[in-house]
Length: 344
Image 1 (cartoon, rainbow, N blue to C red):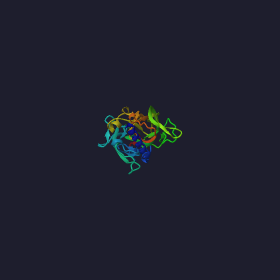
Image 2: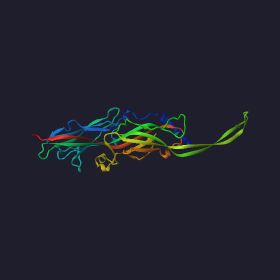
Image 3: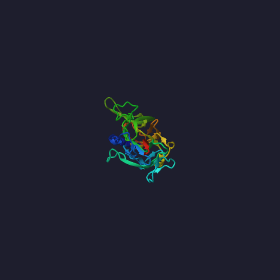
């Protein structure tokens, strides 16, 4: 009975995988996520003492996804308190109590969709600062440093071959298991660059089947039957996928299990797992075990394998859909120099 159920599952895989194309559409290409920059003249390149300076940023989601889990992103501005001070009360803008020189606010921006194939753009306003110039200096150049931090994901879906004949000389197999390379990104700053399928032998199954053979002489005369035992050996293979991951954007990813976006983005780097991403994968809907689950991009490799309970003892190769999903926070930065002068 178990063998019958197993064969039905295998045939189901063959039917589904044989007709299903890669899920990787044009939406899931590119190597960018959320871009941002100072808005034009916000602030100007040059201001005067006591000028109230308005800060704004153009934020553009050029990737394939909205911000993960309905969370918002965080935009921060670091300034030198010798040359700028907060102007008035700004209810949507916050100053960190432990860092008097940093403002922050939250934002949301959607990725590419059918209605806007280029992604959504928004303007994030980050409040008012008054320029000041202590002492007797006539002018000073001061740097403004802005950072954007947002939760994002990478998604890859492709058809792979589960080659059960790697140790046998099969003349015309349904498919062959070969490495796949991805150079165009998946619409995110973190990319799956390569998937190397490995069919790992884990055990040998030996079966003996008793059959009956008719005994016939040279004249075609039937003389009876005799029993014959046929022995077969089959290698059980475990599909394992070596997944290579790269940072293809201009910023820095990190992994954090903090519950809120503010905790994840506003805490110091010491509490973040820098250059690490979280990975999940499935094969035709069957969840894979990935080691490591949190991948350090210094190495950028994880191995995801079919669980023992999900192994199929089949001698026929077949195609199946492999899905890989990465989750992470991503940080990028911009800076601008502003000249503060005295009026004569």
